[in-house]
Image 1 (cartoon, rainbow, N blue to C red):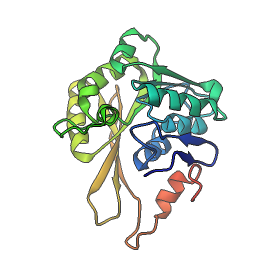
Image 2 (tube, rainbow, N blue to C red):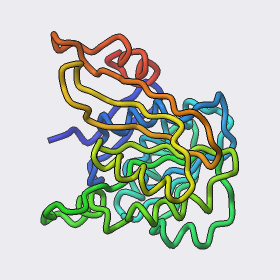
Image 3 (spheres, rainbow, N blue to C red):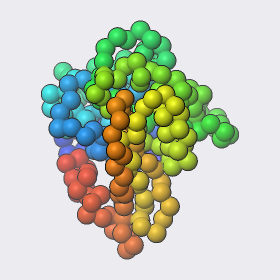
Length: 238
């Protein structure tokens, strides 16, 4: 069972009321999303505990960050985590289904991030909150992209993290909706393992795709220097 509080170097995250706890996916997305040195308006789709938004607030000190969360308990906890952080004045979270949010929102964002639900044909558990967090019927890829298409600025970037199989499906849908895949980061436990996750970035303008890998551990089971460097500004253990 995970601890109710996860401490970072500059903030802390309570996540005991969230279906999805702070984990590798979230911290890698929070540390790697974004190709620029600064952004003005950032949107996170599906807050969970708010950890990704908090990491982005630490990285981009002038950005205003908005977050959308459908689950009441997760929203409440993310909001409290934001209030307790050094960046409370730049964080604004809303309780809403993203499909309702984007239809009524007219702002444009230069960075949008998401750690979206990705199960489509898996059996559901008895935990309704976890089903919402993990299964695409709560936010199908088509709906996610439709909302991003409306809210992303012309030069903006959309970053997300998915398992490899689902990432391939998502990329195909995105291309049909006139998005261009600018970056692909393959996450592997070590060099001999299969790809665990893909971090992808998309924009509305054409650009050559850049691909690279991040290995979490070496063959001895120790964290790689690359992984440590990515998370050094955030995780206490590094």
